[in-house]
Amino acid sequence: SLSRCQMEGSGSPRSRKLHFPVGLWINSPRKHFVKLGGRWPSAISVKKTAKGKRPLKVETFLSAPDLLTRHLLVRRDSAAPALMRPFRGGAVTHNGVAIYRDTVLRPGDVIGMGDHFLFLYRDPRVTPAPPLALTLPWQADYSTTCCPSGLVDRQEALRQYLGSTDAVLKFHPRHADSLLQEVISKNSSPDSGGGPLAPAYLLSLMIDHAAKHLDPALTPQILLKSANMIKEIVWDNIKEFGDKHPTQNSTEPEGEISTSSVLKLSADLRPLMFWMSNATELLNFFQVKVEALEKEWEFEAPGDPVLTADMDTCSEALAQLDVIMHTFQQCVYHLTKTLYSLLPALLDTNPFSSEDKDKEKDGAQVSALPPKVAGLVEVYRCSLMLSREACLSPPLTSQTFGYLFFFTNTSLLNTLLERGEMSKDGLFSWSRAVQIRTNLDLVLDWLQGAGLGDIASEFMKKLSATVNFLCIPKTRLIQSSWSSLQEDHGLLSPSQLHHLLTNYKLGPTRAPPQCWAPPPGTELTGDIFESFLDHPPLILPNETPRLDLSQPIPSPELQKEVTRLRTFLWGLDQDELPANQR
Image 1 (cartoon, rainbow, N blue to C red):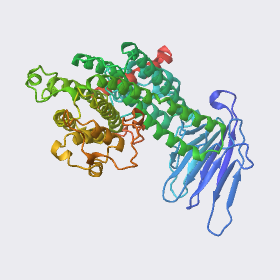
Image 2: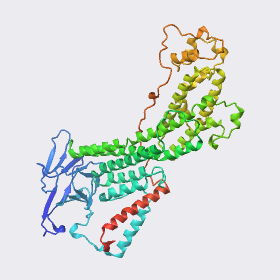
Image 3: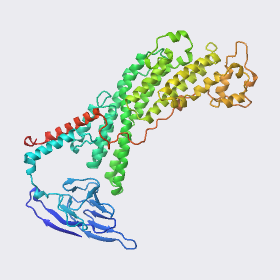
Image 4: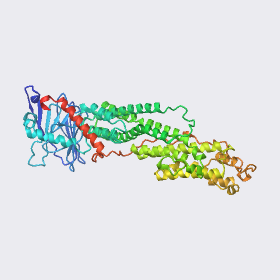
């Protein structure tokens, strides 16, 4: 049942024309809906459907200039309290507070629609009727704003909020741009002090508050603005890095690279790895929020141009985070460029040489390795430290090292196949193969100890298979047939196997045995070299965000930054108040 009376005012803001229905009753125990709005043939409709009966409609007309065609939805079933939610753009208050999403209705609550209607929610099953949950505008008592105790209570609440460990960052919509600028500008580098994931965490707090408590139109805008700001910073970092490390002649060997050069490269890569990690976490968080927005929009009218524009904005925000691709490309490019100069040491270093053993070792972490091999491992070690310092997500860490090991395998294998046919190198011989195998095992053992053994073994298996083939004792190899060798070393293509056998160093006067000849018709025209174009593709992680906002703020550094931002926002509020109200 619904009744209504009208009150006429004299024109002041608090006494303007109000339509005040004294009761909104939902009597049916079955689930049903109440739709409220203007410019409908039925402005309020209560619908219920019982099995075998025609739908029952009770209609009441509302008319006001600020009522939308679809303004408010109220729904309830017997197992849960009533819920209400405004349709997009509908101005609705709950006990005097503007709402934008599902809100629980309890008897005594006052619902405001636009500037002209108030409804009092009653549940006939609850007796006696509870009191109003809200002091009506014309009954407001302002004494609490002036008395000392009220002031003390507000100061205590502010103090508790500023120092709270709850993952909450409240702000007014008009301060969204200022807050966004403050978050990005003060947390734009790995040395900003907030921790490795500070930008992602703080922006997630901001977006979470907007998505839960503010106008839904604001969330897509924050998503897009933050993504654009991040992209701009990343491009600046890439340009700065490119100025320090030009790419000219990047494929030409540069001779030996010192540990200090590797460490400098690592230091210069820190900002890129920092933003690759943060952009990945934000992408995961954005995707979750966009999915939640899509579910909310299911209540709205299909094809609404405003909602379509919002979805396009969200899609654009997600697309802007393709900076992850660019940071990944820059990091692996310059790491592989450094690897390229160091990889030949694996083929040329004799791990059994006393001269190599007595040389000064590079770095305590890899001191058990021959110096030149240690230089190679130093690149892997610095890459691992970079990913750990940046808290790079495990899937992206695996892909980064997968690419580095793919490059290691392809570059070394091609170099081995190319140099093996040169008589002066003698790489296709048992003695040199044992040295290469030992160096490779030293590297793989170190990677295993660092937790990268499985990835390395997967991407370097063809190099290992080739070296294992060359390590077959000569006496056994010369007795092996083509078919048995092909069966035992299936990772090698016929062209590669034929190349190895044709150029194998049996001795100055000894020809390859006849049993090595491939059967007639064997396809041997294929390229013996591996293609760098077959690298694994970058697959952006699509996983549950690691930033759990249901838990307390996770670190003292983030707590300090959140408290600073809360104080910053409080200062903005104070600046807008008259001097006598601060």
